Image (cartoon, rainbow, N blue to C red):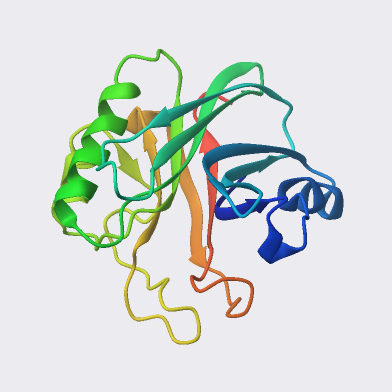
Length: 200
């Protein structure tokens, strides 16, 4: 399952390509786009690719200001080994920690009582010991286990601002986590985590 941020959908700058559909075709995965804003004759937002069938989705608008780019948590639902799971792609504000804290609090609130295991993956624009990450610490586990692994900037990463988080903490065990050696596709390095579903 893959979480993608900053995805164009039929915008002028990317030649009118539906990037989610094209990535789904190339990877032979199921793909779904979540609109964040209208942009250049198309839309811009986030996407999820999954080898599991995607059964539903929700776009949760995160707190912000009217004159700033809307931020979202893009929730998808899928059956993983006979159990419903929520997989969420998100991209928190890049300039002000105040916004990131409020956005993290909103995600914790939205998924506080959903009754299914939840994975949140994406660009949180925050360092491991920063206030936005502390919002998640009480009830959420992290694939990196609190140990920083550098993801940004892509050519020579020195800081971690990208994460894979999950709740309840005991719903998954982390078998492997690493930053992929891919400096070209994005200005961030991707994180790969292998999570084992507990009870399987």
